[in-house]
Image (cartoon, rainbow, N blue to C red; front, side):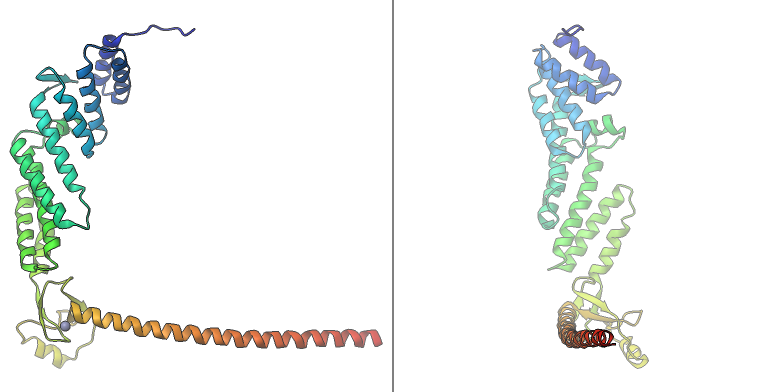
Length: 314
Ligand SMILES: [Zn+2]
């Protein structure tokens, strides 16, 4: 026989309210689940509370926001209290759906930066339209930060343009620089320095003449690289008069991607050949040494038996 009294659904619900006020969310979640089993009249609100607590466990989990949105859709009342805060049902549904969309967009794989950029643009535009200048209530409740939908959307716009820049850089460095300019503007709007965007823009628009093939190339770090070399003072002087330089300020060479990869791969192949030849020589030497060791061992054992014979005959 167990002692104790059994609370009914409403008593459990009231107990959970106190736990929520004390910010004991794990406890409250368990109490609410028990209340749900007891067929409380407040079961719709209980489901909302459980979902609201789950969102608080991980503010970057889209499925928690979606679950809260679904629970809210079944709520009869147009508003509800959670802890000390009052929430409007309809605007919270919109916030949840918009946040789920933003988080999902951010999770689009790194290998498809164009798809991710487009999804983020879409999600940010939606967040601006739906939440706009209003505060993101769930974020405010759990983190204490007063961030508006617009502010979060602006940050996401910056990320989106950075993704699109990354994707465009391969085929169109000029377009990529434009995306970085957009990203810079958004970062500035949010009070950030945008330094990284400026650096990328400079990189994207930097042009050179390939030292090897003489082709003009735009886009450092992807379309051309800097290669360590030792040009003579005469060559450095001559290059400084060219419109697009082939020699960097540090006197290294600018080399287009095709020449760079061509030289690198040929150098790899040559060093691989040397390596294989070296290993062959090493194996041959080893085999020779093994034969010599075996011969020496034979001689030693013969000498040993001769010594034993001599001792026996003494
Ligand atoms: Zn080249």
